[in-house]
Image 1 (cartoon, one colour):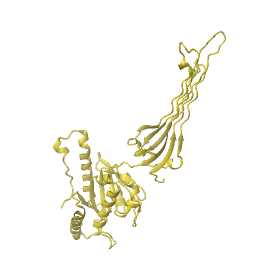
Image 2 (tube, one colour):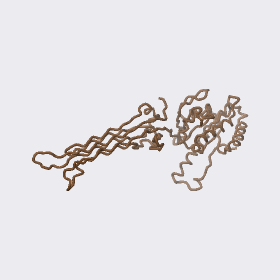
Image 3 (spheres, helix red, strand yellow):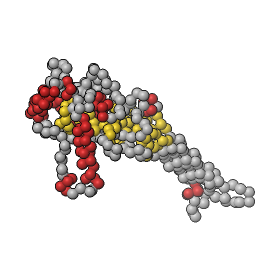
Image 4 (tube, helix red, strand yellow):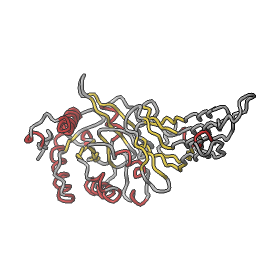
Length: 363
């Protein structure tokens, strides 16, 4: 299935039915009085989050959704039937914007979450409501209200705990294949990942977390180069970013420090809030460096990178292709995620809640 993460649709709820202005006319019953019924309510439009849907492809080609109008009221106190509601099912993680104002109308963050996005119009009043002691034969009635209508922009942001960030061919897809059941395309050329992939990483029988792999960034991405900047929104819900760096590039003109710094610069330029998320260094492709030279290569990179970016966070030398170093990374992520959620539960004292310690290799 083609991955679609954006779509634009038009929704209009049904108009309310009109009220009726009728009078009771029966033999032997003089001056029967008003008996016009109310109009029915127009059908509303709802959205429901569904975890079994992974893409917005259903809304790429079907773009108009118009609710059914309520029926008009009738004589003999007959009320009009209400219009049927329309239910739109969308992936969990969909954000719905008013296209004209860019206001967020709904954020579908939980399975089965149901939100009304366009309210159907109320039905009009029949003339029986206008009867009084001084107006025994009212001819007044009201028309139904119009249903709400909007042009909407749908934006899917995948729900993941950890996001992978880096240049094309840094090994992001290889890593997510190595530590989860996800099977994204892997090849020896850049831009093999064309859309986000999600993988569930099992820490043990009781713990797991979700990891997201998005297309790689390149220098100039914030100005429209490459694919990755379009998919950065999928990392906005993550709690930790893993910045993968190819520490042993095949291209002799490549400079891992310069390339890693460029990625951070593109991230800051595009979305400073995303850039401020916890970001860990993952130095990949350790298997391409002779074993006796690995420690020096890691130290030299860190020294130059810290000088260039003032980075002082954790780092993890790994080889995604054979799994070397991935276990400590998984355990560190799991512990960090636990620390992030524990203060919300309220079972930590102040000292524990302030702890930022993360088990990782440090110089």
